[in-house]
Image (cartoon, rainbow, N blue to C red; front, side):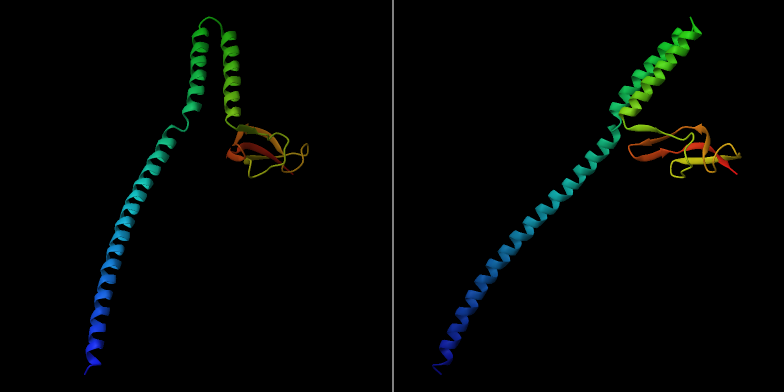
Length: 166
């Protein structure tokens, strides 16, 4: 019987130690859970802020370009008001404004696509007509009906062209 009492006492002692460890581990788990909840809330706030910043950026991304284009609008208005006095001045003014606008577009990375005399390229050209001719090689652009443009290296509007065929 003496063997049973020390075992019982040992077991009770071990239960006390295990209960204490369980309380400590439970408290630690609670602390981790609370920390995780704070991190989760912070992350949600971060996502909302990034979305808001992205929307704000998209909303005003073209602001610098628009400010440059306002100068062109001003010059067009001046050209129209001077047209009352001379048609020659109007033509000259509109020509200067076109150069100004082309300069702005070029600085923004917009380039016109070369079409006349080029081999037809469906990525750069849109064939709207074809003409039978022996004067030009087959699949050569013989007339540009509307200019095409690329922004950096991406075609944003293909050139509308007339293509030679045999």
